[in-house]
Amino acid sequence: MSDEDWVYNYFNYFTEIEEHFQRARATGLFLLSPLDWALIETWKNAGVPLEAVMRGIDAAFDKWRARKVKTQMVNSLAFCAQAVLTEAQIMAGTAQPRPRREVAPPFDQEELCKYLCENSAAVRDVEGYSEIAGALERLAEESNQHYADLEALEQRLTVLEEKMIAIARTRQSEEDLLAARREMDRQLRPYRGKMTADQLSMLEKQYLERSLLERAGLPRLSLFYMR
Figure (cartoon, rainbow, N blue to C red):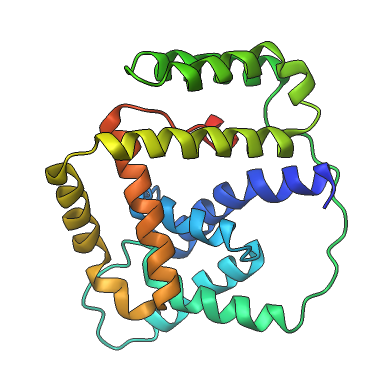
């Protein structure tokens, strides 16, 4: 995949899913929950095509609207999980080469440098993460080089975030982990029947990692969070 293709697919994946779900829901502005964002990340990491997600959202809402009795409004992307999986499986058997798209990043090099500096400062404010903060500072100093290859930069940031999560996990109390799992189970309960065991496993991992960083006061490092 070219860097241009990666930029298009990566930076449009999240925003287009969010906007498409809001349009399908047809109730104006609707803010996605931490569970929703974790689910989008699992789809991205699993290589689910953007088109499959959008088709799945449409199919799920079409089925919901066809119900004679609608007991509740659709309040989570998780409602669409099974339909998205179905569409992804269909597309896997009929995949066609996509045209190359020349797309510039949705931010400039100065914004990238600022983002890396802000994350470095935020990480340094939390005791025990100075090595990661220093790595982010070095990336910021070299941001003009990294701007030319954002995919490689994202890979570096992923490694740093994984190290950060590993440290945070050793400091997490049993009470905090239990509270996070209980909240996750509460949000997931209505949708467990719509997901496979693998989907649930990936989603639970993403959700708990997001919760862990939030409780520790640590930022997400991915370039997506510049939006």
